[in-house]
Image (cartoon, rainbow, N blue to C red; front, side, top):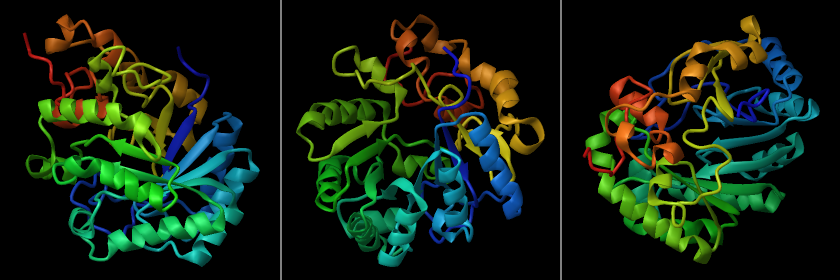
Length: 332
């Protein structure tokens, strides 16, 4: 199945950030930013191609000076608008501006059940309490708030406490994100990442907890399919990674990549047009039609997970088709 356009475009308006997180894929990335008229032309192109959702990431979106203007333009063009933020700059006034600009939801990063764990991971003292305050401000303004938690070695044992804390502060959904091994995440992988067997144990625990959790739990890791049709069922719209199939990533300069964790340019939205990129870009075709390699070639679960997370395989090996390094199945 190939859609006529991506369902979601994850858009980095700027890589400027006030944090220096240990796992960040983009903290050391620099890209030229387009002037506002060009950015608004990108909005028009997304609308022309009938993209449904745009999610602003980064970097820290609230540092981008034209965020509200761009969000309003996207909303007025018929797009549903959301963003992910570290929460540091999100006070009551900002929450009101976010609401008035038409954001349907805002995700706040919360990577620990305690300030010690979260602040160390985010390399910013006080960031834990600012994140919780941001959730409170969003709730007071009537904006749907969600939480993004990157699972890593220091928080995997307390993920239930993170979910509980998020729900207490009004989060409707908690996204339990897999560790991507890109950028600083790769540099700090030995310190932060779990072993394949530890990932299997975590997902079994998290999936068993899902129906009891005080907030909705969401997962973005196709490797869960290896657990089987019962405990591994996550209701995904496509098999394998969604990047290049349901979603794309848009850089500040208009370059399009399959996702933020795969820095391979498929084209430029202002030069090439989004529809042409979506239909014809070789890199997207390669991601949609992967060739199993190594242990994937003889794995009975390959038809469900399609090699796991393509971004993680690419970061670790430079090859889209390589097995996900988090895969817990024996090579035999």
